[in-house]
Length: 205
Ligand SMILES: [Zn+2]
Image (cartoon, rainbow, N blue to C red; front, side):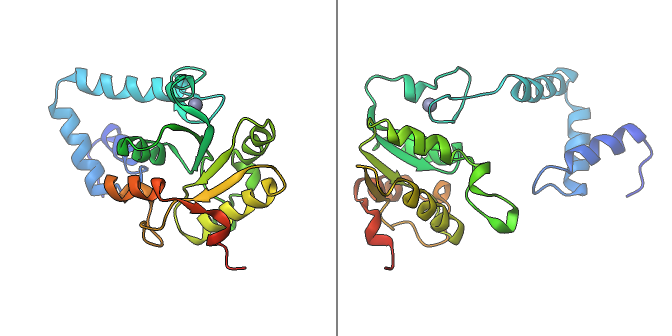
């Protein structure tokens, strides 16, 4: 792609670094911004900068939050004895949208994937295990995507907490194998949390 402007070329390059955005789309977006009032570009740049500089993670569940303890963890009406283990904030949002769940969450920050160089130490598994030892949590619900990486992560955590006096369950597989949680419809996802099954049942022993 030949550019008549180095400024445009740089902007297109940066935009095209985003997932799913090719050079052509990046060029279309850059030209779109140029046609809009300058305020829009300023607002976009400022919000991204602020996101990076000011973002916090909840000290209890590791969800993205604007404050030290997120709204869900700080809500006294939520059941702190019930913790749903998910990969990231998108899963929290999907489950919250069902309106069926009143417990807390634990956000792992991904799943174990040797192929992508993600090991247990790159996730918030230690924090979950330590939290589980405190005795407040009575049940962990594994709600990771039903992929090989998701299953590996579930099993790894299960092994760490197996000896504790803790119920473990997994969301009912109304969610198709390989499906990401965020793509499940609200009714299916809501039902799969209510109809969760003991984690041991999901293991092929
Ligand atoms: Zn929280």
